[in-house]
Image (cartoon, rainbow, N blue to C red; front, side, top):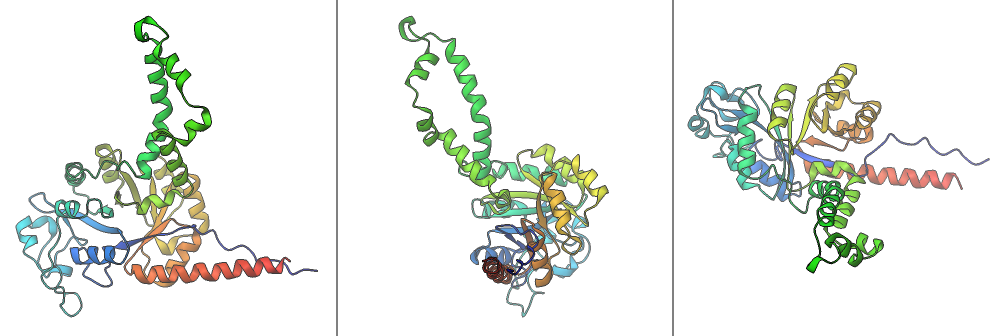
Length: 349
């Protein structure tokens, strides 16, 4: 009697988007250009950062409500003017002082600097009523609300709109007489059109459909697509306001844990991604989130063990402070899984 194959492992994504949390914040001071650029230079173009408003309404990238932890300043972010915040040193506290002189970035500056280079996961950190509008204005000003023509998001939109556009064009052409009152233009175009197989191989609509189909093979890749923007928050009201202003931008809800209450709130909320806390996550929860139509991205991944846990649960990606180590760990885990699969196949022979 042949040996029984080992039980299947928990569901894992075929790919996993590593999002540098506040940049490569294990190697450089969090939420600074040094940290963001280091992540990009090491091959991690998706990074997370936080946005709040200063007393005079400027959007700045800083995590804590209090200035002191990372800048040495006193008081709250929303109690300081932009000029005061920009005068603070956001790098001297980190390590041996090699990053002294780093400043708190503005959202305006970051959107300029990283346009076309990164996928920013931007957390609406505070409950300031004016935050969604201030962020939306800057996103629109710098064109981050528009999916680039080559992106999967644009391809999916084009593919979805192509049949309706073709039908409208045909209806308009059918009523328009041809040259010198001959065959209507729509009929002439139909007669001259390539065969169905040829049409499927050419044309913008076909290319868009193919790209959308490929993206649909693993929708989670959208969380790392460059250029890209995902707006996140723990605060559902901020997400609602933001989605009204930026309907074409992906939004994500940061959750402490998944359960009936969260599931009910998620059903009526304007977002495409759920971001559960890593140490409260289970494979069953991920399956439920996916069944409800959401992408799933974990947060709070503070240890290698938690990283492997969320990957085994089947999430699409996670924020981590140490992206290089995370990539190495996931590569090793994939190798071990491949060896287990091979051993299981041999056992069935």
